[in-house]
Image (cartoon, rainbow, N blue to C red):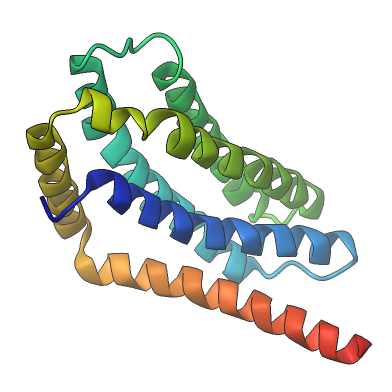
Length: 189
């Protein structure tokens, strides 16, 4: 099997973490008096709603988690119920961030960003180190291949161009953060 549904999800995690890292930088900037960049924050909201939630979490909730349930993992306990709860919590936090943009409420924006930055790395860790390793033991090669094919169909329905655009946004957000860090270090030296 050439395709791995788990590798596909891990790739998406890396993209999501780039945007989360940008959120962390924004917290620092906003906390030190920077003005709110509503355009950037609106793009982050869109990324989180579309790429992270609709596409990525959709694959997990609609395809991966049911496959684990069929393999005997209970839906009501750990890890599946906890991960579903965290997806729901992520939706709530992103909605809070979106609402804080109109009208702009800086304190609420910072609070939402802090909670998003607290949630996502821990959530991703749980998936990658608790749930995903179970896939080789519990999911047959055929099930894993079917999941990879289903994930590709989700990507096609989502739109390959939209998918690429969101990954480009994440890369550029991460790149601008890296450039700022480099510039800061050069200023110090």
